[in-house]
Image (cartoon, rainbow, N blue to C red; front, side, top):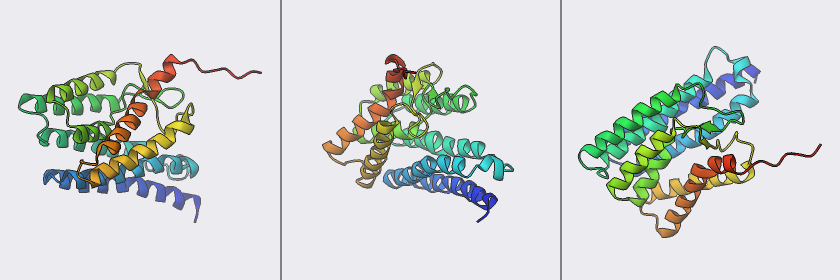
Length: 233
């Protein structure tokens, strides 16, 4: 297989995320939330794999006619933002005007964030919450907090997108990666398990999902607070 063929294959692999997004949306329209999230978890796995493959096979060099970063952003907006926002709005967790506020806040702020050229830091973390509403909404589906709590969470997280608070990239942020990557794998497993069990996975899984979500949400901020030890020499 030539370098160009391998690079094109990576682009095609990335594009499967759009297919999984459509399957998730079709399930969401029919209020099949478990099926929707299973497709979103599959898309999440693809998104976690395609980046390392793109760098390994140098897609910018060998298949530059396709913009892999743009393709990734389009699919991420669908799977991370648009479909989860629709699901939250249609789930019944938010009554009356609160659902409208959340869906408009999520989609508008995320669109601006995805277009922000300052979204990545020097160590490839994210400056501001990276629009991973698929993760937030899944936890809300599992825990089902009061709608005022949901509204507060959405507003605070949306506001954090435009701060200098940092959030880890599980694959590319080198600091603490030996911990972050296994936590991300664990979150994916527990998320898929929760969706498979129709968001009633039991207290043990709920606790594990809450802990892994908390780590992924606050690890980057902790790194900003805790100074990194400089290497001698």
